[in-house]
Image 1 (tube, one colour):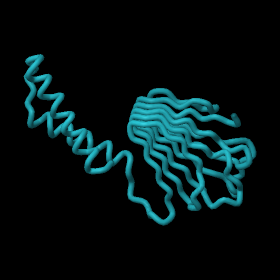
Image 2: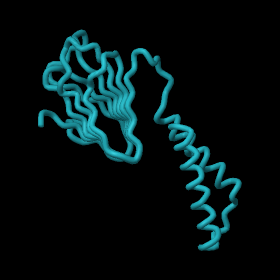
Image 3: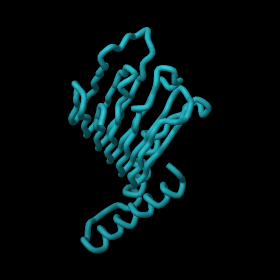
Image 4: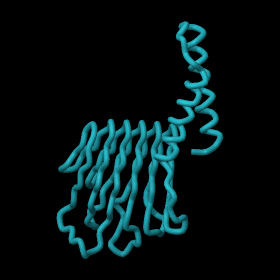
Length: 177
């Protein structure tokens, strides 16, 4: 989360607090309210960003908008984050010769459609809190974790690991369109 976005959301939260306090006569301790908003925004920031080696990670983020991603960058790990938006992550063109091994998809208050590859086996690990996943054998709603493996996956062979993390949103997996 950039500093500008953090500051804009903080100021919007403070403004909402003053509107509630002034218009609706809500007794709101503003110091605690501002501290609470700051803690929530820092938590969202930590949820969506992790310390990873930059040279092996391809990262894409969507904030308050729609985007389509097709994996084209050479690397071992790809990370896609969506907050208050919608995105499509297209993995259908991956081949067993590609170096990509791990795809991480983080969703907070948004929706992501993932297009799964036909030519490469995959393992999907989902972790859900107040959200849902759909399109696989093991779907989650509310809270939980699930693991789904495609047909023909051999642990010693080449496959792609997809890690889906959902908080107040949804990930929908699609096989061939």
